[in-house]
Length: 286
Image 1: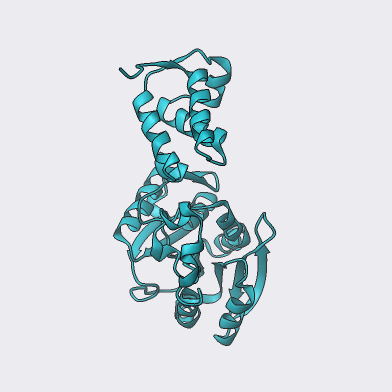
Image 2: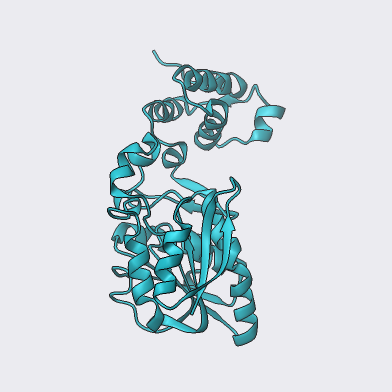
């Protein structure tokens, strides 16, 4: 008969051993996240009351099984932290990652300056997914408003739910559109973390990305540049005078994306590297 309860400290050691034994790289970290989430405990509890009895053993063991099978820990938890926010995930949303915070950092000063100067900053987030990029701006700048665009109803529902959880629903709109197809009006800032992996390289991605992130959020077409072409060719009519386009890019795409936008009449204003030193964000103006 399965155990009904176990002390927290002992359970943490057990979970870590299970994951480590299965070759999970961050076994201790993932074990802690799983045990804390499903038991409702904290890191402080593990230190101060390791003898605390935990009864949610079945849920924890099931979560460990999922992690051992290769499912990313944040998919199991159903959320991920991004720019100080807790964002819910769903099957058709890309899991937001710290590299994308580079793009937020790159254009947040412009959002704040625009809001201070004209009383608002209208933002269009193309391929919004969880809403991570757009919602970061709304949380950081109370005068900003944003439209999150996606082709997935599931993603749009997730982004809207995240906006509600963060208390910014009144300034966030979820819009179904294939890039600019259904978009009207002009925006001070157009941002996107589009699919940018070349189709032929999808199978070479880490299992956790290839098997669990939605394919259409990864696949950028034969050369990985399909989405950038669409944005470069169609953004101008939707951009306010003096507006900016901010993009996340793959580590080796700076030159190609810059050329695409320069050919469309834009100029590169700033470029930004992520914490790993890789090219990660480009900001263009007309």
